[in-house]
Image (cartoon, rainbow, N blue to C red; front, side, top):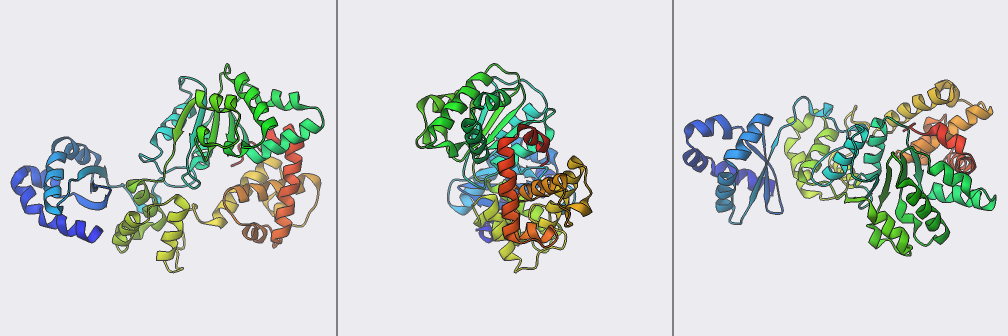
Length: 398
């Protein structure tokens, strides 16, 4: 579709020059470049934000009319400013999410919370398919939050609840979760079919309604679509702010792929990247896989941390060593002191949460096996379920 769009764009230049006038065409329209066409919308880029705003205000109807007549179907036109600077320095990384129409609402809400702005209510639930960036956005928010949030993935919360329930210490966990601190519960949809945990979470959410700090949840499904869920809990989840995060849109895909590609996305592989952004209508992992296939295994030597496991490991290794007061060399060594062993377990768990495989973690941890990494993480999860102090100690490490 991109070659057809480029050919059509070339053919309409004389018409645009005539309809807009020579001066306006030269000043505002000659720099426009078509990059995508999807679902009846043509996406155009220009060099500056001023030019994009000017064309959007004055020439958007003309562009839509002329393109529609040329291609033979009604079309809409969207304008964007071409990213400034080198493409391999775009703000797309674990610290800078891709923002487009698919996730802008959630992003703006989280940005406002991170800046300390007050919003109506204090409960927020974001839902969407796996791979659209729900957890990614929440971790980005955590990095900008002035207060350390409590963070639970639903399986971890379940394990902690089972431990305190067996030891008759449920009130202790409830007190921890109802402190006036931000609380994040990821994968809340996995509460399906767990009636005791559902009742516990319901009491926590009701107690947090009057708190100053927010409660944020992420789910694969809308609350009404979560199976085997208590009606009162579903109502409570719906009582707050609920927003869907969808697959990245055309411009989001293009920006993400340009960042992955780096500098070649501006010249030698620009057409290939733009074509891939149009052809691959998927989640971020699917985009990464499709992009990697186009490279035939020859990935850039310094591509972004988004898919560079060594850089992810190095960042988490430094953070873990600093938090636990050990050296990075000791983390990779054979020492088995209690503090060192716990720090190593935490590092392994954080790496798996960031998408590294067990084999990669074992290799970076001094040649340990995948089974050893799995055992380390299971052991740590049992410790986390029993110890609120340990949970607090590792908060904010990602």
